[in-house]
Image 1 (cartoon, rainbow, N blue to C red):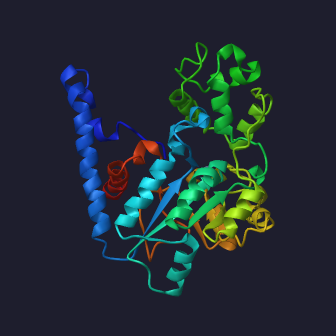
Image 2 (cartoon, helix red, strand yellow):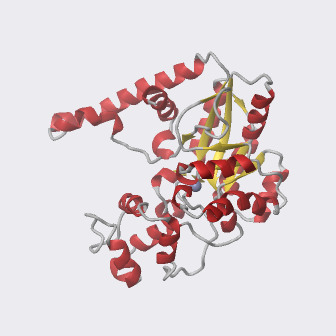
Image 3 (cartoon, protein in one colour):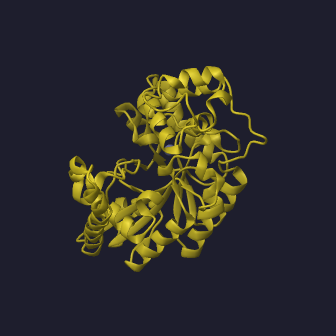
Length: 358
Ligand SMILES: [Zn+2]
């Protein structure tokens, strides 16, 4: 789900050493984005069947937020980007729908809008309340926020953000045991020489995904980077209740601890992550939790059976549109961040690329 900035110019990579090619790379990139953008726009304007487009976001952070320097680029969209997308789909005549409502109408055989747009946010970041909620209210656009129940009301930090904190500081300031453990996954990165950039940290995080989440957390929990005062970055119950009371926001389950479910070999642990997350969330008094979202898009056949027992539907990380005959447990989405959606052209281009090359 990370943006690959070179995708559009790959065919020309073999001659990229010349100055001339460097000079035309950017116009070529703009040209290809424009072509894909037209393809995306045409597809949405010429729909033959009722279609659901699901937009996905993680963090909504202003350009001057300090958290931008502590986060993977593919996780961040600015409030302007979100606002741009909502304005764009409104101008296309799309109906903003609640995802659960659309699924219920679909299974009841009721009439569906020609172009429906559902908005989802993954992980339950506090900035969804601070920056996204006011925009959703202004557009009267419903949204579903997928929550990780054991992180709510805490200062806990997901392991990728913990890794970023460790590796973007001077090597000599890192806890020694963690520094030595992470070095095995750093490959050719200048890990011992200087603080890694966010892009380099992103590579290290991808390398760590060969391990299961519990192992990574246990390694990281041996020590923490000292912070003057921990800052809560995940939603709390008060914010959840306020958003639920608005009638605009519904919540979905995203496991108890954000473990990748294809890594859990114990059936009881797998079931607990999936089913008990629903119980945790419903105990908060924020309505019935009917939808699930697979962390990292990973699931097993057994995991999917647990999901089907407890939920009406589930979101994947696969790109694409959804039709009336799409399985409710295999919902496709478009994951947006500033890198692939900060303008109308990039937004349509992301949709066009997915629909053409899917
Ligand atoms: Zn997630």
